[in-house]
Length: 167
Image (cartoon, rainbow, N blue to C red; front, side, top):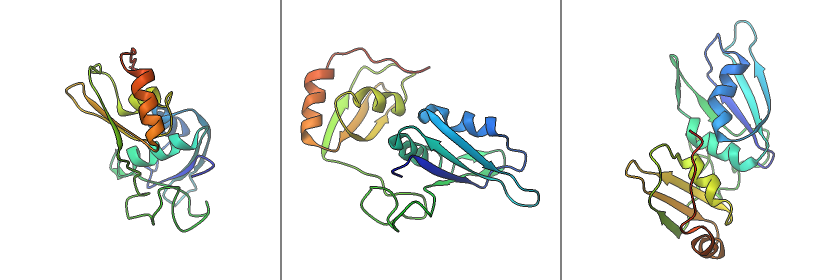
């Protein structure tokens, strides 16, 4: 995970690089897409993000995602280091890396209907290292920080600020 690279497997036979870009651009700036589409084999790809945190979000958001008749397999490449995937702190399960959660939690209210968990996470990164973000339909969200100091700074710095979504 340290280099921002992910593996994308079980792609449709007719997949193009643009399809992969469309699937992952919302998670962050993509540095490189390496599509392996050899005749007679199921296509797969490696996607490298500028920010390794975006790679983590992409694994979380796209593993198991349906694309045509295919169910995507999105995970960290096997050759990316130790047997413990990423910095989550435990062994990977069947469905990607362990999610990092924290007790340093902030409830965010008044989010626009178009706001996504990625938008919220990006906004809150101004205050520190975000390990989890989620948005509910009622305009409320949850953000968890790795450190208490980051959570406290977010409360002081970002309370009452304008939130803009990408949509």
